[in-house]
Image (cartoon, rainbow, N blue to C red; front, side, top):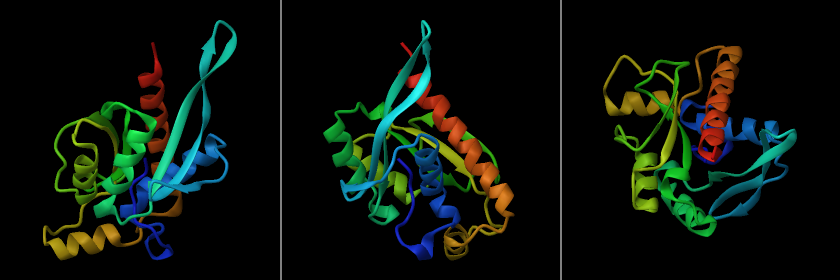
Length: 185
């Protein structure tokens, strides 16, 4: 699940890096067109996950980009998880992380929500914080003033297009690693 805000005015902002990663994965995995479901855009398909005794093996995936605002993402994620009958730890959320320097990408399951309102909403929607996250470092402004921090994450990237593309690529690789690790016997 990619975390972001709907609308063109939010495209290519730090807060929407989750959507950017989901879009890149959809192209990479050739998932086709999204359909509206669970108050979001949903893509489903199978991706090549390795070879089992010479035959290609696939993993079933579903990508969801909630079309609620980020602070209400749980209203989309909770029903999707229920429909797919997924254990909470199989839900993977890709989101911006101001507590990581720009360019750093880390994965973890469970843990604190670091004041991220989108993650709080997802915790409410899932009934647990034990979901997996791919945290995409977008850096932090020099201030802790909530208005300055908000303007920073809702603002466009100051880094070059190439740096942003490299960040998205690193996050895609980390998502693939986590998904294939979860699917391993």
